Amino acid sequence: MKALFARWVEALGPVGTVGIGLIVFCAAFYFGTIRPGEQRLANLHSEQARLERVQAQRAREGGAPKAVRWRNGCRGSTICSPARS
Image 1 (cartoon, rainbow, N blue to C red):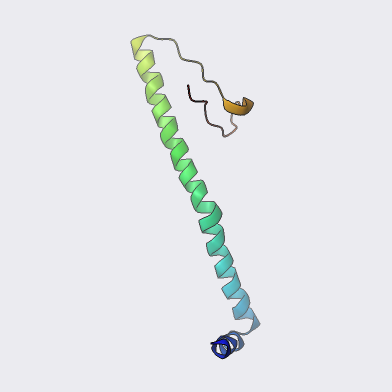
Image 2 (cartoon, helix red, strand yellow):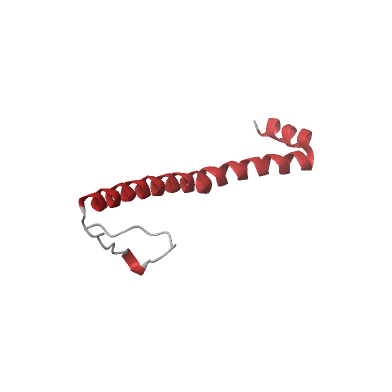
């Protein structure tokens, strides 16, 4: 097994070995960082849509908008989640 691996590395050369390393790094980066970020973004979009539906329903009912309390003092465009009541 070790000899087979050594022959592969020798056949690939330094450029091929670096290329394989880059492929492994990119895959790890994608599944460790990019994909969870995409899932979090999708969750935030669905939460935004839910909140917009609630706000529109309250506006139709004539109620005043309910204030949102933020955890840890988050405000504005900072990515935070509202505190659960």
